[in-house]
Length: 228
Image (tube, rainbow, N blue to C red):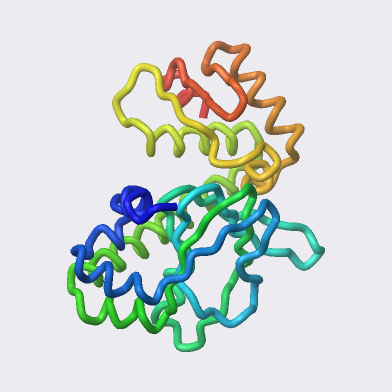
């Protein structure tokens, strides 16, 4: 990946976009870029944390093994997303989950100490970090709310609405691409992949959406809200 492409990918990131060219290049000297194959593990839960990461291309899942050995997916990160932000100022930085590539990916890693120094010396970056952590808390609460629904269809509909909200707030037809495979999203919603497929097909038969691979076009957002 060229430096120009790298900058293009990361310029919309809420953290790195706060750095001017000089500050970014200074921080960039500490960075390491890794090319990952599908299934490669970046770090495992309960391991000491040493880096803050950014996804340059591909996709990365954050997951955790439950006590019965099942994998629980928390989120799927795409190009421009960051991970391990909460480790920056942790007294004992230990990863609470595992980060793993779900497709071929390229990531950029910054040592925690180097990025922490940048935050301490850049008020705009510090504010951006606080805003990002607040958004992460809101996302976590929204995810917990989705899991509080007993019926699987309500979980799926609420998930689709949350994805639609990120894409467009005032559209007659909202289109977006699911961030991962149905198996990964089903794990995120704590349902079976077959259940997710059945519900998506049901919503398509009802004329609420069109499903083409991972791409979803919501035809009637209001009707989907009422369905929820």
